[in-house]
Length: 470
Image (cartoon, rainbow, N blue to C red; front, side, top):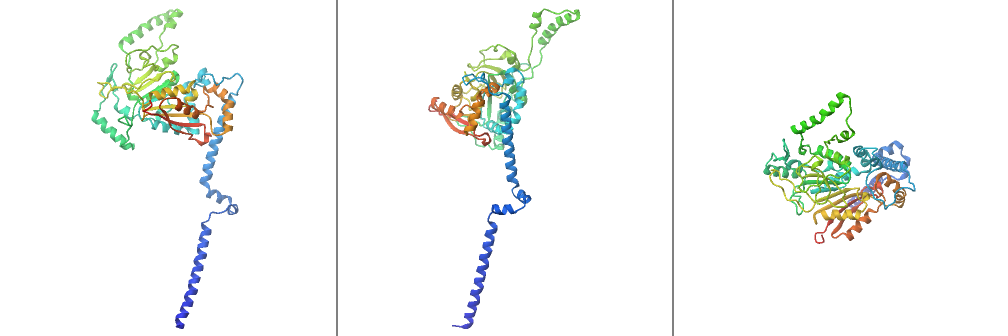
């Protein structure tokens, strides 16, 4: 063996072993550096460094805690304002869905609507309303529409673009200024801009909202809804002007009153009561009237006056109708009979489009707790929704995940009913599941409890009707 070679081998082996040892030490050092610090290490670090390291986690935890504390405080304060008593109502009493302040006239429906903004945002309900408004497609029916808190999240572009315009003079309509070809091009562009390209409803030709029907049993809350609709779609609201005949009639009525004021006398009590009170808003007339508005047999016409109110298929009193049937509000009991979808006027204002038999989307927010017979209401909604492709969306509150929460709901249920007109301790999932078993064709697509901060008391329900069983 060559001694020179053997020496080189010895030096190479020594160098290799030294390199391997240094690599091993380096890897151990890097592994130790990459390991998460233990609690002992954290304790050794200064507080300012810990705060800087976990800043995001602390902010998220702090916000979550603040929201929970605010919500629980608001809940307890609401319970304390009206403590439970033996004389309160029982579960057999009929819910109205109207708060004590509304029933007593302490606040107006508009004030009540404003009071809901902050609590709904705090609890996350506002985001769920946005989701529900975005799911509206085709012919839409909202049951227990209330003050119209979902309206600002509905896509009105199709109705706004295609509806014929109210006539500038007199009643009736003027053709849409755009041709059908222009409307089609704009529709395709809107779909592409909104990411809806290729999205269609089975059995329907478009994913857009083509009509909206709102139903509620209370006229004062419908008045708030009507005000919001006028702001959303001002171009569809006819501008009523006084005719010469009406001006002359008003002048004739004012003459005797002026003569009496000049002579210093007062007219009979009967004449004072007979003085007409006119309402600009049709819902105000319904709110003030103690008797229901008369029903008419003719098809619905464009109206902003209670004289044109009607009952459609037993579905209640038509309180407002704009856009030639595209936007309607009914004062009706949703448990009795829901109105059918409308027959709307074509954009050219010459022919009426045939009315469909079913709605494509049916919505309801916090209604099952406010109905005397929620099973009957679910049956009505199943009757009017399109089998197969149509959907029923419910946002409800009821019993939660935890026994201690349900215990509080049960304890304060009578006082909550007395104050808010609803039973907040109903088992919503059980109601829906039983309805699925008893109502032909009704199927549960999903039942979710989306807001963990609510302890499982908030429900998101999606239903459909099986076309083979309907």
